[in-house]
Length: 321
Image (tube, rainbow, N blue to C red; front, side):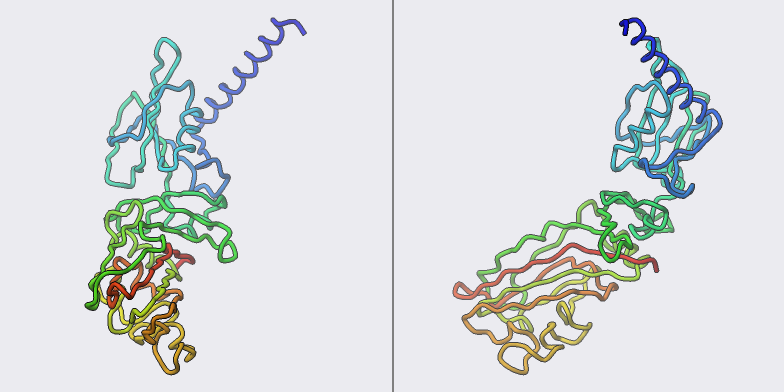
């Protein structure tokens, strides 16, 4: 095939692609958010002759609105974009990406220089996102606070766990197995738990637990001569000292083995209460969502000959309340 014919076919294909893209936007069509064909409430919506006044994630030059939308779908935090209506000498348009929508704390400005495209509905949770048609397991931006007082934040959505209901997973800086040693008094060891991308635990994660039917967080303590009941406790999201451990109901003072009445050493509330120079452990899920997530871990009874390890899992919430 002659080279000139190949070039002509390529040029014609590009022309048709750009023409169709511009035709769709000229008719004010909505585009699928993040490339997923879902209900219309989760699409980019065009607001003509407007732009958002906010700090952008990035600004680039593109040929078409379709190019700008593709850039936004590949940025995990992108929720909207300004598309410049004027071309430069190279035929490029300005494309500004944002992590806010017109429903957030930034106002729209009327202008003949831009069109604004936004996600009309930011999911409240991963279960809500699943109901809107999102089915890809990956990071999403959510906004569980309907009042708009709390910032949106990014989470990991596991769309396969819990029978595919859409599980919101929030990570933190204390997930590793951490060594506890060096002090005797109750609660003398303390570790704050900082959640990824969260600036206000009560407002943001408190809202997440409210819009979810179930929340859970795994806790495990491995002990060597270290008591739990008299020297250790967990701290809830509002700063309250909890009187129970994973697998036990609130205010029971028990661990999972105390509920099942099978703790090491007979009728005890926790395995670690046996307080012998042998390794024992207590573990289970914390599932009373009004206390979650855990914001601090406190332990004691760990002199040089005594020690322990704590492991705190990610916060997981699912279902729509």
